[in-house]
Structure formats: structure tokens, C-alpha cells
Length: 250
Image (cartoon, rainbow, N blue to C red):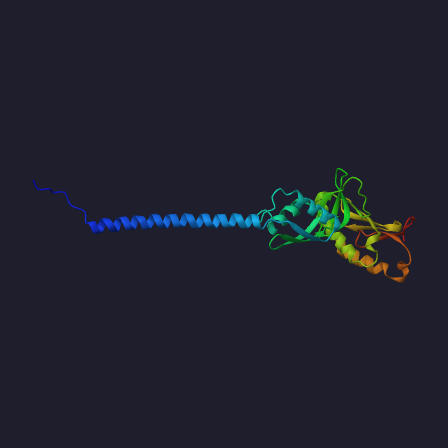
């Protein structure tokens, strides 16, 4: 009987087997390459773990950051990326204004810290005291036992931005030294600014810049420059000026 089954061409069968083997070989090579890369990466990550660091800047911040590094259970390359460390420290340490971290291969960090500089104390509606910096941020509540010699800001939280602008204007006025500023209060429509020696300026909301410039020019004149004054400048057309700690309208 005649066999009608078609016979497979041996050459085609051989070519098919070679193609399959080639694909298997390529797949295996890919796995080996990936494994080698991962293995090398893991080895390098461990090999470049941080073992020492140099910190410059504020002494208290130096110690705080050194303590944080000491407490890290893992200090491998990934865990100690400069950008990652900077973000963690800035979030966790309100007294830290800026930190520059650079890697010194293979195992070291160079760190430069910059402390926030408080310019005032802000008292909120609950009489809690916070440090207030030159950028207008109340960045940390005062710790127990802290007693910095700084001006006191008795203003609502919603007025903090306006208070910051007022402080900037006062720094530019050139009559009263800023280190003599003792307190700033916000009334219903005016500021009360207290300096040392009984000097007080009452300034209108929204017209602080004009009032301060005019007041500074007035107090530089010989008639007014040799005494301390309490000035009520809430009205644009009539000011009340009294000697500090004394009554009477001049």
C-alpha cells in the first residue's frame, strides 16, 4: 500500500531546531546579563556604604546631623544619596535653613549646614511662642528653657505676611535701631510698634510705607531728633506726637 504521509524536509527541520536553540541561547544570555548587572549593582551599593563624614557649619546642627547618621541602620549608597538625605533633614529639623551634601567616593560625605536665623518671636492666639525668621516663617515653637532676646509679634496668623512686610519697612527707616524694637501689635486698623525708651509708633494698615517714610524724615529734623517720641500717625492729615512716657499733645 502506498504511504501518502508527507515527509518533512530534513534541512528545514534542522534549520527550525537551530533557530529554537538560538532563541533559547539569547534568552539565557539576557538572564545572565541581567543577573550580572544586578549582582554588580548590589555589590557596588554595599561596597560604597558611608563610613565617615565631615560636617561644617552651626555646631548644634552638626551634632544633630551626626547623630542622625549614626542612628541609620543602613548606610549603603542608595540610602545615603545626597538629595535623599537633604530632603529628610530639612523636613525633620526646622532650625535647618539649608544643607549641602556631596559624596566623596568611595565612603565619605561632605556636609555643610546653614541655620535659620530668628528675627522675632510670634505669639499666636493660644499665647504659644514661635521663632520667626527673616523670610516671614514661624518655623518652630519655643522650647522649654529657651529665652531669646527678640522682638515680640502679637498678631493673628492671617497677619503674619503683612507683619513681615512691616518689619522690612522698619529695617529701612534709618531712625530707630532695629535692636531697640521690642514689640509689634496689630489693632483693628493699625499697628502699634514699640521700641525701647518708651518710643511708640502707631501706623495705619495699608499705608505703612508712606507713614514710615514721612515719620523718619520728620524725626531726622533738629527739632525732633534730640528726644524720644510717641507718634500716632493713623490720620494722614494730623499726627499726634508726645514725648515718650509723658502726656500732652504737640
